[in-house]
Amino acid sequence: MKHDRGQRKMREGFVVSDSMDKTVVVACERLKRQPVYKRVIRRTTKLVAHDEENRCRIGDKVRIMETRPLSRTKRWRVVEVIAGER
Image (tube, one colour):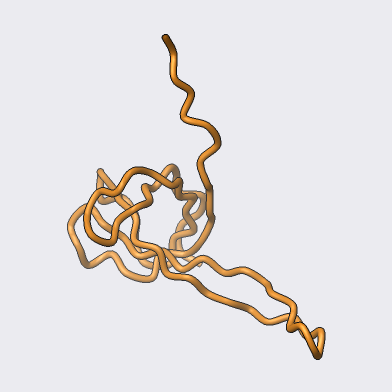
């Protein structure tokens, strides 16, 4: 019997910290419209992601995927490095 995992959330963002071993912090930006004044506001969320080969560096654009909890704060893993330094 085969179990499908379903669609997992994917995000893109920039690495803002790589000082930990096999772990990076990724800043993901989204645009949100202010309800009253209709101005578009940029919101940033920092996500902690698993980087098995320590290949990510600060400034790299990466794609991350939601996964099972790997530690107290890690719930994402790096799928690919899209671009190097900004």
